[in-house]
Image (tube, rainbow, N blue to C red; front, side, top):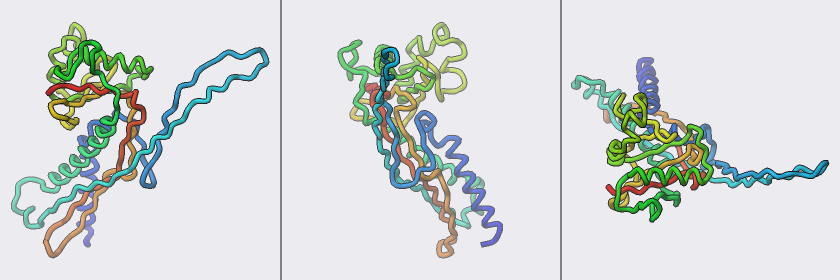
Length: 277
């Protein structure tokens, strides 16, 4: 290959990586992440609670004997490839390379979120039932949110600025009808969801994020209120790109790929809110 071909390959790979980092995954920054994994799986440690106790004068300091429960996370390989015909590039008035780069990066970003959502789906900790009058016949209500908030507090989940909530777009619209979420008298002028787009908003000590890929079972959308350390995300390979020239097709084949996995570390650190949709 000529030098210009190598420049094309390097530039394209850089564009894919940049697109993935910029808009590929919405949930990866909200979970506990481990990079540079070697092997087919990795282990996240779930640390139990310690308890303090008194000791007699000159006696032995009591040992906490904190429980360590390993949680295994399996890696999965995912690919997103497409063709760029050499002659097509002469007939179009847009940058086909950028289009394919973004498409591959976004596809892998959505797959990253799918892995994290699948991990959240394994929790059995739910904010539904007779308490606060919550059933599967309503959407995302104020009482349901407060019940999830209460369950995190009862489990001693830290309120340390690392809590997140991910909801569907229908539920985001329902949140906008709750005065405490959307009214300046409660949220303050700087935390209004109407300002600066609808990507995220701080409320109840958590960052609330609308997402289109949450699991829907029947007419129920699964939304989550969770702490960052409750979910583990492992990376054996970040998004990388391989580009090869196929003379028999007179086209480049562009393959973007990654190896990642996700697992629920602490079921008590994530609360599911089932919402009718």
